[in-house]
Length: 562
RNA sequence: UGGGAUGUCGUCUAAUGGUAGGACAGCGGACUCUGGAUCCGUAUGUGAGGGUUCAAAUCCUUCCAUCCCAGCCA
Image (cartoon, rainbow, N blue to C red; front, side, top):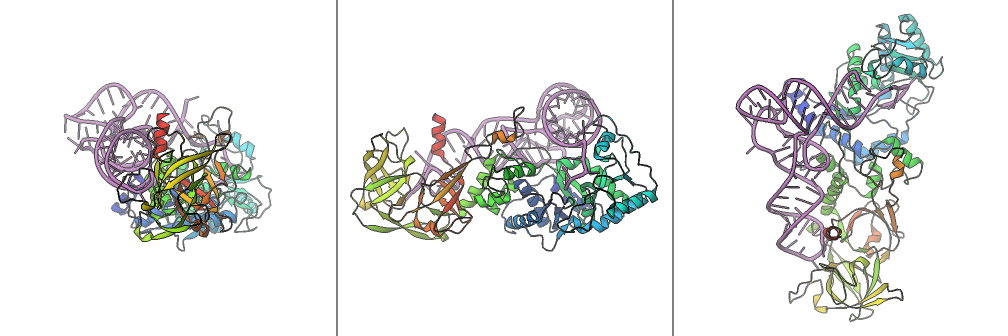
């Protein structure tokens, strides 16, 4: 990924790193991406991944992949695997720096005993409900636990017995002894170990107690020698606790936690909980549904890693909460796919077109360039005959001002083929247009004429004899409103799901070569947009997903004049 | 009404006391065998008030708005 010919835009984290390097605080940097394996990665994670791995790349440091797996009831190897696949697909490499917080369970336990021996942690018998009462509220201070003053020996004994599995889930916890009156709730004697008699996906049944995030994360960072521990804004209040643990314990170093604003994208949600609900309740077809903002979904939709990385660069990194316009994502894929995607012709809503003066039974092979943006992409043959299909929307019986596509008496160019003129419109008894009879100019083969006559409109087409039917899935935003944080009183985000988010089209016809597409291969269907062969695509049953449309200045103009 | 943060074009983001800049979106135009791409041009912004200074987005001050925190989740 060295060749990303991008000018690096600075941000406040890079400024901090620059200072740390300049002052000699660090000679190199180590970052980490620490997902919890309890769901699939989404575009918001991609922002964090590109930030952390991108920093490591640019500063010639390294970035660890660490699974933050301290809560076995929510976590699963399925997620571990999907996360590794997605990070790799995005183009990043953690080399041999793959870790799990569970790798540190022994060390974490030892440290906990140190805290106890130093009188900085105690075993508490309060139930969850009691603990809530004792914690106080945002405005009133908490009260000390009645178990706060147990002797060190008793704490040690109880903690060891917790570990040995002598007590039921939830009956006891190990808590840090900090300050129940702290205005920061996180400092009110936070729980650091809880009893969970649940098997862990890596450690099996060897643990009956599991450490909490706040305790685990800072120590894991320190053990790995992380220099800059980058997380999202909601952990800002946790930083004093992050620092507190590291100050109490004989850890090898003290990483600096830096918080940035997570990504919000318009017309979608970015919460693992909500995404899980969409999957579980069947509002979408799995984590890789092309409408999902998951990496897996976007991959299947046809987004490229390059486009996503470019997007991550463009949105920048800051501390202010923000909402990024989905159009920026569209821009990024279009820009990438414009350079790479081979052009093909397909008709989504076909109408029959017959060329009256073209010999019956004749089929000729015409040259068609594969990508005007890339001379090396070469060309292909497309077959042409008397019987064609064109896009129904490219014909207008009574054309509006500025229309330069097909209309009665009008001449247009069939892309790569001939000039044709619409001579006759055939309609059924309900006045629906069923067929267009046209004439062609044999002198215009290839799509131009010697007399230099101007033909403004160019439309795409397919040949009836050789076209193949296919299924095309067209997508719109998953939700009807841009900001799901702004929903009406008493409504759920589910009430804002867009019922139109998926259109399945079975009418579409494509030029023959598209049958040979490989799953996940991307094309530009001329004048229609970028399309990606679905994971279930086969030559016998071609299925394409629309990644995004092309820019359409005609449609925009029409919308405006309406 | 506790604590922590954040406010710069419509959106995202730079500017570290010295000309408020870029990108997307928008608008206008050129060009075009994709109404695509490309190229050119253009409008729009420092939350508000006060203060310091030759000079303030930046420093001080008073407001205002928004977000986060009361899991044995991360």
